[in-house]
Length: 339
Image (cartoon, rainbow, N blue to C red; front, top):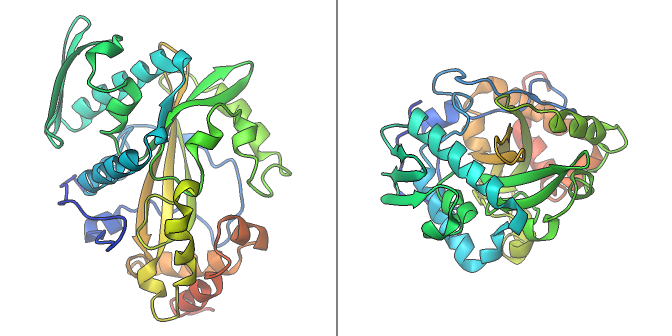
């Protein structure tokens, strides 16, 4: 599927968000087996990947680009602290500008253009009607701070992880569509600290192994993994800061509206080493699909039922599914003939 941006749809209030058949077909379904268990499910993010897939390029853009950029603007107006960068991360933020602009201009030339004359760069984003000239590395020549400037032009959340003393620290980011976590709270934390709430994985030694692997990622060898949860309504911003707006959604699921309201939320997470700062750019690209759309693929429908039915109680509770999980399992059961 080649990108054809839709007009702006909403991820709040009236929830006009929807997926085209092409978007459903390319959805990154996260379950390779009928059972789900935590693992270090990291693999090389080799590009170009399969044509039209979410893995084709380093950074994926799809039909929801304008909608997500509109939602990002709304969130940042409500809470500007959803974007931050500690002073020592300035070079890393310019690394991110370099990486994003070069990737977009190369992978989506019909929408983005970058020209360079030494340190004088001119960037054009035709989708957002942006055209700016600036001196690379000089933040005073940008209309916004570096992280916010480029973060407002990419889908998904981004964190930049500073690597020091054999550990990774969340020292910069733009996070407006998180799955129940807060950049303001986690900022400055080490890898183990910001993963502290995750059940089971610590006891299994998963994060110790993951940290060693991530600290060894070389330049030019990005890696990826998928993460998932279920979200009620097509809501991107499920942050702790906005919990009063979405917490009660979990009580609104009924046997009649499960397929429409419950969405599988999948994050394509990519970690990429930055050349100048040695930091890791951590992109968290979120995809949403309603259960109604998901079950149009019979294999996905059957596997989804089996995965949901076999989820450990600890994961059901951690992912916030307790109130509606039985309804999901029951609704999906009719798509699993062997049930």
